[in-house]
Image (cartoon, rainbow, N blue to C red; front, side, top):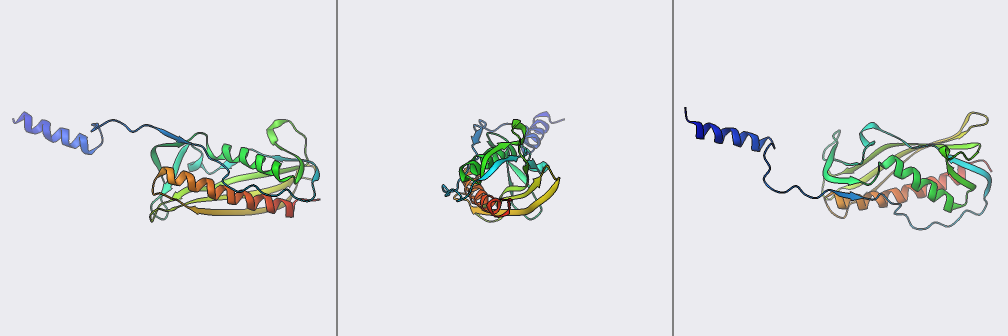
Length: 201
């Protein structure tokens, strides 16, 4: 039996399967999801009372700190060695509250879990959040569904789906992160404008 030849064949099989390391592992990199929109002007009329923003719900595949991408229709994957500093749903909830506070549409804007009392609740669902990398350099795609609910009367006031995309400057995770910030900023612009039109005065 030729042991050296068998050993080399087994080693080649393990290398092809990723079982053997050919070098040092790249350093893990973390990216902060930010509101990339320009500062918006405050609304002319501030509504009394508080708007409560419920915790953002997220489609299962995006409920992670991994950065998602797609290289073909109907497919998703995660970047290796690149991640968000916190899950996108949680980050978007905080950015949304901050943006709506700055808009001045309500006397107060708070997280629904904060203990603040308010009659109007905003429910947000993150439906899509991925780098569309089918062609270089691709674009970041963000889709939210937003509801306004009157918690006193238990009625739906308004509901709308929002979608935005932004081109990535480079065909990699750092470029995708920049594009996500830009797309999210534009989407938050849309949500703030819709809220001012839809919320009772």
